[in-house]
Length: 291
Image 1 (cartoon, rainbow, N blue to C red):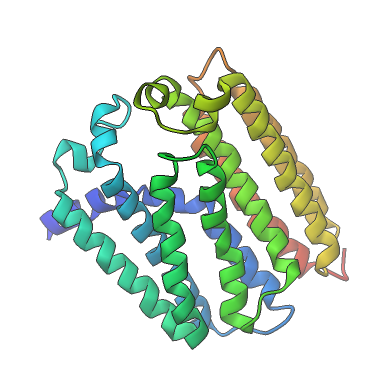
Image 2: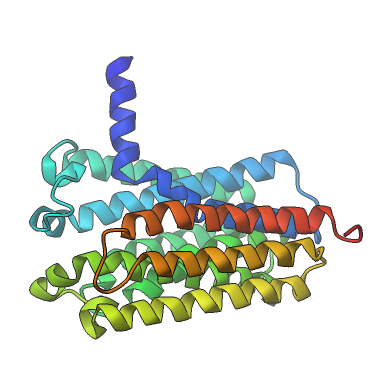
């Protein structure tokens, strides 16, 4: 039993399961918002969460396989599970297949439409792993792929896609792409050496940080727009203001001459921002018409 538990921990570490906190609150926010259109039952909520966990696990498993050779050459990533031999390529492949199957099954439990769309979603998620080999838009593509989550929740519940929920997806897309660009600054020299495409490698670290700032401004603006698209309490805007402050702090922590605090900005600050988005929408929905 202990050996099995240790193996599970290794797999969770491989797919950076803790990073689920970046996108899951946005999906949960969609669940809150969609109830203004159609009330949900707990079974549907459960399958939505299972589908998201399966999709993210499959995407990360595939990414680790696709990048295994590059990771082995990069000092920052050489200790990852596949390059280090802790998990074999065969084991990672099996894991990715099982996670993909879980996502497809969960999607099927939501609706026939979700079932068929699940294959398209997996295509987007898997394609991301190769985008940095051909275009510096890789960060935007990652944001787009993960940004499908709120729209996926909406389609799963209502069966249609509306313009309102796409604004939350834009907020998530620009949020993810922005901090992924910051994170990629760590691999500036390696990406240039290997001929990989990234915003830092293309434009330099200083300009990359400005682009990241612009994306996060778009994220905040999108969150503000949501206030007028959905019936939310002004309490929501207070939290959006706090989120804007955390974005400001994130970009103050990192500068072109000192990248030592990127991990703090990447995980700790972004985790808080993501959670605050959910809290903002939840309280904005609960207190509408009251405050």
